[in-house]
Length: 367
Image 1: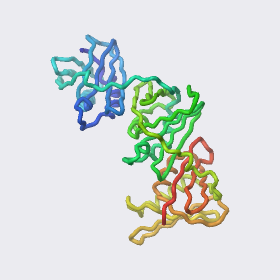
Image 2: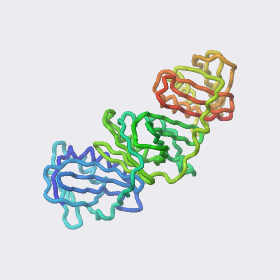
Image 3: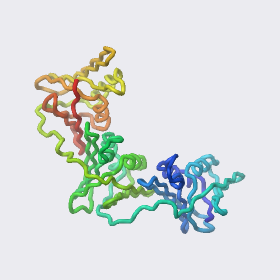
Image 4: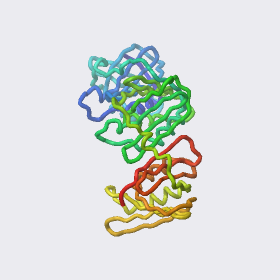
């Protein structure tokens, strides 16, 4: 393997794929990048066995083809440290990868390409294409509700639900739930359900940098693939059955208010100043035309703030984890938000007034 490539052409794809690499891994090859030069195309691939990320870049000067793996961190640091507009030469010498540019020369340890994990080929049961902007909004409005290190594997991920003409993302940690649906053409003849691991959902969101560019998503029983012009992400799926999330969505709330989303978010944000990470339960008092947020902490410190809302009904006091509401008000991007609930012991349903397919549910907390 021997080729030359412009440093500036290599830096961005190398940075994209290096984000998946684990600094410390029980398998040394997982700390490496797979470099595969075929024809005039260089493929860079990283993997953590659950998630694989690859990017391709065109190479104009190829002396010989080949495949090898070397330290992802060292390759990226070398590439980043070299001057702009410089040219880098790669070649294999014995068990070493030689990297040269100008008067700089490096010899890096390698591991065989055959040791690098391969993603499995399987029959795709879903196929759809949407814009990066659509997918980015879908992930941004739901990913915050995923659990972390829950004993129920499906909660540590995001449900991807494909139905005829629609794509839905759902996430919940058992205390709050977020779902977002977009209309998109697909090949589904019946509802398909896949669970994307938390790390994969976050990594996919990071890759969406061009709102107008298209993303093609395909998947089967055990894998999902998201293909963009700059890179391709392949992820294993969580092997579990997702909960019946529709059962927990309240649809018959007798009390409804409409308020300014940003005013409500800021009121909750200020209430959170008095709280520690361990305790963030605030009292929310709903009365005629106002929504009062009251925060009290163990040091007997108190904050009160009222926000004007459209509400006519019986007064009610209910407790919520204020950080959960902040997350929802941040995820919603419209000016107005609607909140519906039945009583102080029932979950609240939050939706944008200008509904763009997103719904959020937050369970109450004991005061």
